Image (cartoon, rainbow, N blue to C red; front, side):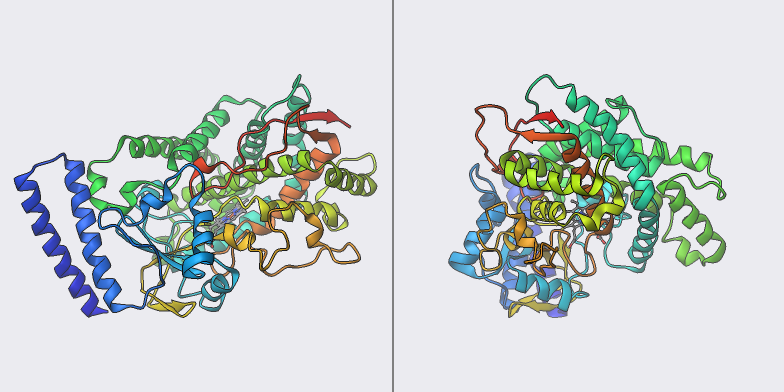
Length: 521
Ligand code: HEM
């Protein structure tokens, strides 16, 4: 490894000398120079790495851009292209260069399980991404922190708080309150409408109430502002930002990057305003919500733990834990609801069967969290939605913590590793007719829910979704309440088109905008 570092360092020196020379003779804009430095350093590091390791196969990488041009294109998302490459050319483990950065994509269940479960610790890191490091105030969030004692402690505390405040009767009360408001607004729609806005309002309000304790009115201006910033972030971030893969660009950022960081700063300002208000009125004898619960954990640790532990639980760690609830919890859940409503509108027979099941269990009352195990078919509808509409198609990137292997190939330490969840959950070898919406695949002959090992929308291993155990009951309750109140259909004459929106890049798998009509039941 030290040989490799020496080679890379020498290559970097050569690259810098070369760039100085180029810029001396043909001075360009700082951005051009930054790109040249990044490209040359990356190319030489690429050559050095290739010699040393038996890397997984992959497409030819251009010196300047790696494979980023393959990510562009209006027809096919990159994760779909990768599955095609895996089948036609390279097999399930593929090397791709995002600019100069070496990345490995895992495109089937077997190699993903080998990496995430069997060699869990080798693959448990998170890569350094400049944009996310700025947003997470130095990688102090659970999602973006590297594998470390600080991350473990933060994850443990957040899990305890989530179990308390995002489950059982508390969750049910919040969901019922928010759903009543949002469903009334939906019912007042005179005709067909895009449900995304309602699903977004619903999820932002639920998470904000769980975190900050107060249900906001429908159309609350502050929450709407935050929702808009999330939407703008999603529509601009797409396949990521150049600043993450070409370090010199960070000193001369692009306008898009500056806009994206502006949205993220707006979100942080909102969160810190609420957290500061909680701190000012905090009392350990009156824990009001999830934020208070995390503040309590922090104050208890301050009494009992060493300075070393407290350095892992600063005010910024607390703020970033709340940011995780919004960042990781809201988008995934609201997009899952977007897919669910589309599938329901496109499959009236399946919707009717779920409604019959819900009615038979709940009678004249609204569904409750305790009904969960009596609703296997409705749960199967949710599981199939999470499979087919896999909202985080490449999950969150991992990083190798040591030199390791997967699928018989070498993966050097510090490699960025993506798990192609979309390919795994659409794999024809594991799923019969994977493009079909068929909840029955999750039921056994007696109609009971069955466990399917390759169903991994929440990923697996050490970095698996922290929110899985709360997201499933929460989304089931929301879906059951929606189907109890409404029958959802496509507008007259509309054609069912469950296609994904290719413009959202590799980070998000969302349906193309569509409209529905709701009929009160
Ligand atoms: C439809 C709902 C959801 C889906 C499909 C989903 C999926 C995922 C996936 C695929 C990951 C990446 C795992 C990996 O790196 O291998 C993740 C991470 C994470 N999720 Fe979720 N998630 C959902 C809801 C939630 C909710 C409601 C919360 C919390 C309120 C949450 C909190 C987190 C956190 C904190 C992480 C980072 C875990 C870590 O790095 O240790 N998620 N989620």
